Image 1 (cartoon, rainbow, N blue to C red):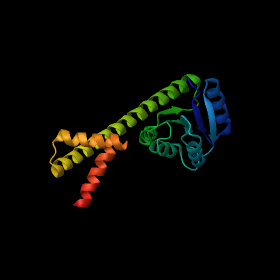
Image 2: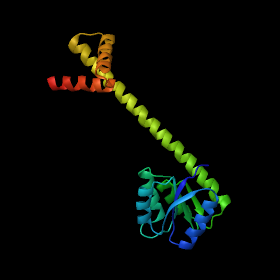
Image 3: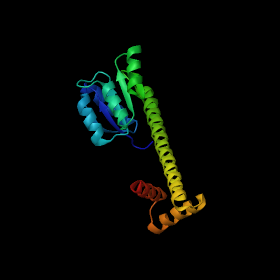
Image 4: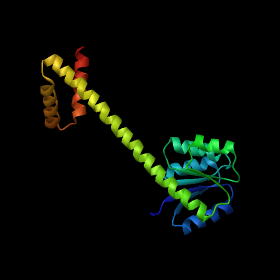
Length: 193
């Protein structure tokens, strides 16, 4: 386990101290502590931790509100700690997309698997989101290439293969991507029309 960076958020400084000690013993690095939600959010944005552990009932902005913002902004996975849990709290946790909801007090045997799974699952989600983004980009490029080939075929009387080779040659000669060539062909065509 590399030294994952963690931000702790809890209104009780004694509990934070105890949890920090436990996390340090487990090999994690606590890079920030906060007693309220708003400062926690600022800290997460500036320190970019690998994980956030937050109490559900922190002041200012509760743990679930902070977790939801952290999730939406793709900053880190979040583990929420609560004094007790109810079905309503579980629903709030689902809505906020928290990685785990643990009941206080937590010990090493309870928090270690939650941390490791939160980090692993979050890493997998980030990888999948990047792959989806990459595939969307590839699909968009292919659509542009097809459209540009169609324009060249129509306006210059080229075959599909000739249109593709012409764009490929421009790409190599100008040292720009095929997508940029396709966008230029489409733009030039739109300016004429």
